[in-house]
Image 1 (cartoon, one colour):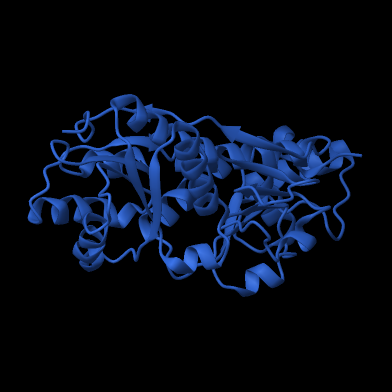
Image 2: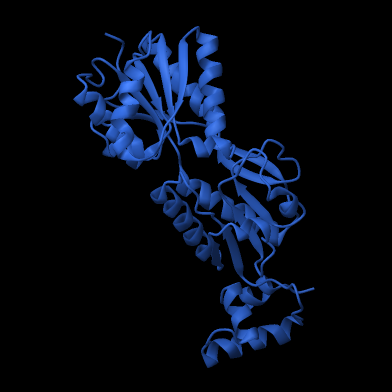
Length: 321
């Protein structure tokens, strides 16, 4: 039986254009409509309820503690990759998207994944790709950075430099309260690696507002023993935190080394540029779309696809004084 993708290929258009030409939902040129109708006749295509729409759904709930630039970057990568495959994207940002994801889309891209995400029962058994990995990913297709390994890699680098007391500045408390998978896995990797290396380690959830940076810095410096190195998994707090340390008389990296888990542009914009494990949001969005489109044109292949962490040394790390 011919599929909408076969019609699109024969007519030289995208699947969404075929859908619009047949439904009349959007204006289509007469020439394009003729090509689509000819391809439909030649292939014997019979549209029916539930047939492909040429649209991917992006579940991207806007929640407290979420940093908008990272959210926008993820959305743009999904849209760009979807267009390259001839699909449009329906963006769903409200909490209602979690309760009713069965909208008129061919497949779903799901973000802000929790360890025990309430959306999972409705996602199993349909075309969906999660950017993030829940605690029980069986039967799901997931793609993500290996955040546990990222936390481990940060600690391993600091231990190689000779640091023995380290602290993790994490995201806002509500991120952990929601059991956001990436945040919890960074903590697990950080604590496990510190324990193996015999380091003194502590974890500090912190608000993402820049005006809280000095309070966070002061809290870290009051610890006994005081850390000689800090791992930051809180993008908007990174640059303000460096400024706060400087304002409190701590030079980076002379007095305090800093490593981050963040996108490269965030690490490079800081002063000094920060040693980091990159969070490749664009790669993750593109990969999610590729997996979703593959599932539409062939048998589903559930599984977890983890990108290995890549650490880049920059000017924010040095052996302890």
